[in-house]
Image (cartoon, rainbow, N blue to C red; front, side, top):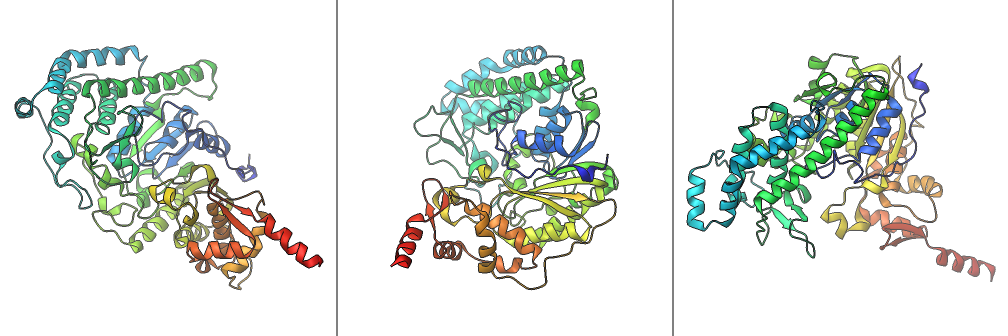
Length: 515
C-alpha cells in the first residue's frame, strides 16, 4: 500500500480527558496529550509492527499508546524525570498487580509505624527523625523559585516522612515492583511540599502544586500538610489502577491477536535521553514509520528547571541541559537558540522518517515566527503539509488565559506532514505579500456565524499567510485583531469565549438601506 493514499485526519478529535487511568491520576506532568487523540493518530498513520517515535516524549503518552497498539515505540526526552514516568507506566512485565500489592505491604512493614510517628511528632522530635534519615544534598533551586534551597520546599515533617518511605521502597529487591512503588512515591512528592495549593471548597487533598499549574516554584501562602502515609497510599492506588488497565489491554490483545503481535514493553519500547536534533546517531536515517510529537512552546515551560525536585531526589543526572529546546530557564536560552533547535529537530524528524510516511507536530504559540520555523523546515526537507487542525477544546488554559480570554491569539494546532518518496517542491500561492486585513477578509467567510474561537481563526490565518509568504504580516496584537473583527460585524461572547456575528448590527444596516 502506498501510504500517501492515507486520508489525513481533517477533523478535531474531542479530548477524552479522564478516559485512561494509565495517563490521568498516576502522576502529574507539565503537559500531556489526550491519549484518545494520540491513539487515533497512531492508528491512522501507522500499522502494527511499525516504529513510532516521539522525539519530545514528555510523560510518554505517544510511547505508551504505541506499545498498546502493537507498534515499536521510541521515546526520547532530555528530562530523566519524564523518561522515568514513561518507563514505569509503559512496563508490561508484571504478571498481575497482586505482586505489586504484596510489595506495598512489605513497604508498610518497613516504615508505616515510623511515618505515623513523624505525622504526630513535635518540632524537636522531627529534628531527631531528620538526623536519622537519608536525604539528598540541599542544592540551590532556580533563580525564579520562591525557595532558595531544595529543603526549603518541604516542611521538616514532609522531608522526614518522604525520606522514610523512599528508604523502605529502595529496599525492595525486585526492580519492576520497586520502580512502580517509586512512581507512587514520586507522585506523592507533588502533594507533600510547600508549593501545594489546596482547592477552595473541596477536601484539602484536591489541589495541586504550583510547579504544574503556573510552572514556578511558588510557595503557598498557607502551607497544607496532608497526611503522609494516606497520600502515598492514594497515589499507590492510582498506580495499581493504571497497571490493571494496561495488563488488561495486554492480556486481551495477546489472547485475541487484536494488535497482530505480542505486547511486551521489554521488546517494543526504547527510551532515549538525547538532543532531539541529533537522534540519527542512535536511531539511524529512514528507520521510523510515524512520528507524533509535541515540542516545547517557546518559553512557556522550563521543563528541566521545574523537574529538579524529582530528578535530584530520584538520583537522576541531567545531561545536555544546554540543548533543551526552550526560551529562558536557568540557562537563559535565547529565542535564536530556540528557533535553531526547533528547526534542527524538525529536519531531524524528516531524516529519521522513511519515505512515504507521516509526521504530526502539535504546536501552540502567538509568535507566528515559530510556526514559520516548523513549516519552512518541513518544506526544506521536501515534506508536504497535508492537514492543519485547531484543537479548540484543548488549548492552554493558563491563569493568563482565564483572565484574558479575548486576548489569546494562537491556539493549539496539529500539523500533519507527508514525506513523499521523492522530495516535493511546494509551489506557493503567489509572490505578492498579503496584509493582515486581506487575510482576514479571505478566511472570515469560511467560519461559522454561530461562533469561532480567536485561536481557530488565527491558526487558519497562520497557514494561509505562510502559503502566501506573508507570515510577517501576522505580527499583530490582540487589540488589532479585535478591532478588525468588530469592524467586520463580529462581537465577542465573554461567556462562551467565542466571536459571534453581530446579527443586530446587520439587521440595522439592512433597515437603513431600505429607506
